[in-house]
Length: 480
Ligand SMILES: [Zn+2]
Image (cartoon, rainbow, N blue to C red):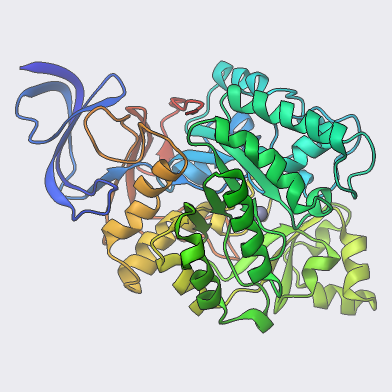
């Protein structure tokens, strides 16, 4: 008999590949899975009875803005409580590193933190900060195009980068990737990047091709009326730079674009795209959330002010109500409320269904942990997919839902030792009750933890148990 750290027995093993679950045990030693199925040859001081509940790989949140949160909130309960063991940070063009700005940062940077929080001129410095004081979950980082622009462009950001700035940005990206970044992200819909022409992004994305597994993740230039043109641009960038693409929080925003999911997916599935590896992330809600900006207010059914620095009394109120009270236009109300964040009701449930069921769809929360009144996706995304969309609505089998949050993102982001129950992989694990798991966070009570999660292990350490953090801080900085 060989001794290991612990054995979980009598579990329904859902391995993250999408294959049907099977009954069995799992043995873990020194942070890794050492046996699976029949663990009769192993002995352990600790034996955990799963009581037939589901044991799956820990969930990978494919789309986060947790860059600062993993340094500041070491338990990260909003994620750990859902079974998330790895977060992909640095999305939408804004990464905390590499960036040490000289001036006040424009929106949407405040979603991540205050300008003074951006003090990691290299990814190596960020990584050291994480390693000195690790979080309960693993983190992998994308380098943000907007962050590179702020660091590389000497003049205003509302112009294409000139050749000097492009050279600086390429050098900074190359170094970020050498320091462990897993790819590049853009936020072409946002002010610090909107002036970047396609060829500026292509030039930068070409750097990725020298780094095995590096991806191009994009919050596209337009998610509303011009969504098709924006998808074409993303595909063109991937093709020209010869890199896999990940489209962030795929949607057709605005009531006038409801029903266009089929058109967008047809384009992605098109022969032209067939040679182009792609994936996309989706959150399971019909409302988005980001900075409150006048240009975003047009394409929505309604806008809920999540929080405003100058007018906290308006938090939780509808924007049109505030504008009516103030007897001003919506645009003027936005300006008076700024800096502010909002929730935009602008997605069709049937489009969401088409997107989330697509085989290339991964689950990503896009939660913003700095917000006092966040979108409920921050606390509810993963249990909502498993409980509401898999169990109640039967969009897909439980195994498919788990695949979208484990094996699929691990392979798309090149996290080789994660995402599957397999001997030799890291023991990021979640034990949950498939009949009970459900989100409880709502727009009214957005920080309500879910129910149905039993225990979460990160690199073999029990980190969340019976509704509370264990205080373990076993997360690692992940690179290729
Ligand atoms: Zn985004």
